[in-house]
Length: 130
Picture 1 (tube, one colour):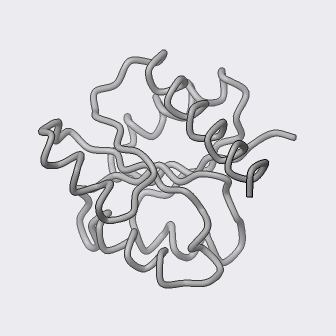
Picture 2 (tube, rainbow, N blue to C red):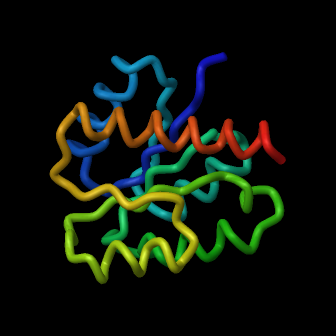
């Protein structure tokens, strides 16, 4: 079964590049250009993973993450934060807030695919042992 990844980023170039890399890796990709757009899309679809930019106008990634975590329908969807902030404290903040992973931009294509694969492998291991 093809896994679906939702990419949420206000930068069209990043969305396009991420979509190309993930689709080449065998994933189905949907995209949203803002937090509110992503939340509306989640009323219609349930991706297997959300890659969520932190710095977006209107509603930042942290606000979106908190809303996802408080909604029973979206709480179980893993979220990888997506940011240009590469400091250790930024990554730790993401993990402390409940993100499954933290991907730094710019990313290499191979790293992005490997991180997404690892997320899905970890989720599968949790299901198998739980």
